[in-house]
Length: 277
Image 1 (cartoon, rainbow, N blue to C red):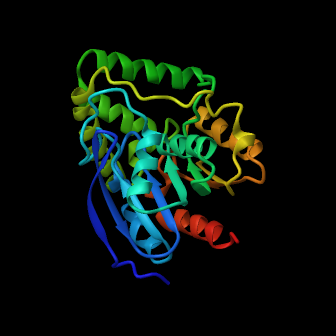
Image 2 (cartoon, helix red, strand yellow):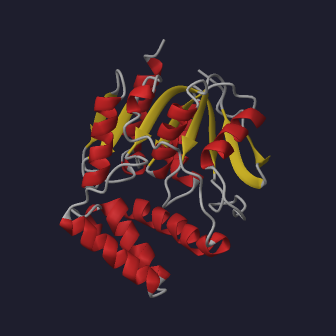
């Protein structure tokens, strides 16, 4: 068992930006990639637990948490690769939720030499066709209209309901501490969006959709059973398209199952990684 107290934190200068990161533990590198409604704090229930077994890294993307805002077009994948180089990691396992899951999938396609194992959780999938239900589409339109009206506090509440509760649950059915933490992180992310208005991120070309069979890393795709239909479809595509991939479903969870059910999530991850050669 590794020493989880072997901790460090700081800022990495990568590609013209400064990324805040934390590292703990010892052993094989394991990188935690956060959701777009959060920052690296979403991994509080995983960071030290995983550091008992691995050298664990979590960091804030540009424009999130404590990292600097982007000032020009940039690649989240190149930021990830640069951070790995600075930390001296030639190869790492990637775990990502939502946008972080999509980032992990894209990296596994673009840089298979860097990715030892892949655990996309409730991931976005680049290039995936829009297949939202009418109810989901109507809710997305409500969020967009509220954002255009400038009511970002209401946008935050709507997004917490959409992603944390899921449209099939009421707020009262969800752990209030999880809702409050995502509300805080997403509120910060929404406020910081103004720092980098108009800046674009560089997409993987061609996108991951249709290229999943190129992924060579052992893969476990995790989904919450209360998540949106398009996210469930992304996980099914990964499970069917990546050679040898496995799928796991966490009951009574939406888009952040690692926060809602950390003990179950941690067990799934550690069992999967621990069984790899």
